Amino acid sequence: MTLDQTVDAWLRSCVRNKKISRNTVAVGIVILDRIRHETPLRKSDIISKGGEISGSRAGLSTVLVKYGIPARYLKETTTRQAHQDGQRLLEKLQYGQQLAKLAPKVRDAQLVIQIAKLADRAHAWLARKHIKIACDRQWAPSAWITAILAEAKGKSGGKVEQHLVGAKLEQRHPHIPIPNYPGHAADVQTGRVGDYAVGLTRYHVTATPSLSVVEKCAENMSAGLHPVLTVPRDKVEKARHLAEELGIEKRLSIVAIEDFIGENIIEMSHDSEQDFLSILKAIIEKYNLRLEQVETDLSLKIEIQ
Image (cartoon, rainbow, N blue to C red):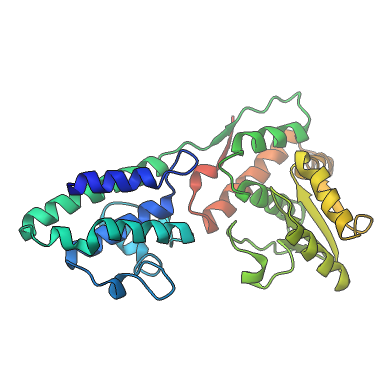
């Protein structure tokens, strides 16, 4: 099997939900780049004791930039599956053993071609279009938010929901620092007791409510804080059932994100004497800025048309 066939077969094996994750693409580039400079590899040199591919975290952006891929494509590989994919690629390549017999220039040329193949996938990902929403002025503000969430469904991973709520709070409370975290940063990693804090209120944002986030809300209550769980409207009932399981349904505020933001747009419009759409645009401007500060997937930026 040629190198081209080997990499193609590996890519086909990495397809999940009809796509290949950028984490896997990045790991593949790291491995092929490493083999360019050291052939064959020893397993201990490329795979850590924890099973991670060396160079796929610290130094990843340097490798990506070398092949014309902006560092914002991925700061570091964050999924265990990507490292497992990388191990399978190394096994298919026999850690470079099958390439060691080739003349150095031939081997390098073949590896560069395969890296370019992966780089093309990265560029295609970066070229994805933003979320575009046409806001009919006759709609209620909550309907605009519903349209945004519907357009983001399937590619948001909860990031759109989180940053929309953060932007809304920042717009509503300009004198209160509203923290900004990447969408994948768990509470336990940051030591926080919620996504956002305003006084004694702790706002939790999730696109898919789970028992763990409701348990975090219960911990807030024990600490004398009031948690507000914001979820998409079609997940409100599920969140209520989870709250009932813990017996905190009467103490936990559960609010649909669409209503949470929509009603605040109306309130802020009255306070500032601006129309609803102007307030929405101000929130979206903050949303896009917050997204740029902490996320790499800028296709989640929103354009109001």
